[in-house]
Image (tube, rainbow, N blue to C red; front, side, top):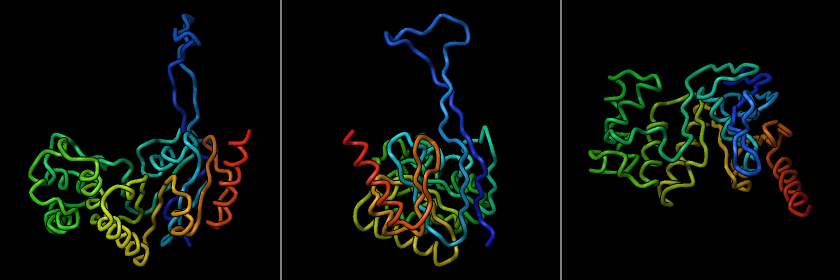
Length: 244
């Protein structure tokens, strides 16, 4: 089966300010920035209809890989091939614009995800009903709580019918009813042959809900495979590291 996402030898490089141990910047020209690799030599294929989870300690590259898959970061090495529409939900605000109302954000996000204005107008009431924000959609998003932003961002992503939904901890926000409806949306995506890629620190939840797990460490893929096998190896490694 042809993958919807293919990553080949992908590397992401960041340039970070460099300081001495005393907090001062070196005076030598060219010595003020340090090269940090967020990802290195990453190979990954995502096929239609599967749920893939990313696990790893803080700084392992999970969020960087999600942003690269979504097209927010351009690889410094290697290449990403996408076949279909990718809907990223990578922060609690879902990329919403604080100075715009909820309704205006629905329209803007839909356009950015490749929908026509006619299509956005046709589904905006469904998005509003799913988000459950009522009259708050008439106010600027900057006054929303974290949970309200997550609800609206997820609702927009869900109803733009992406081929690949990319999530970063977003489903952990909201009440039990919203989390249940979000899970139903993910299951609907999968039954329709769509793909879900998500990252979370809840290893048990990912192991229970994913078809495969990808384990990252220091920006590299160190393990891909069956959820139970990868999760057990990761937890064992973290236990050993904590004991050092």
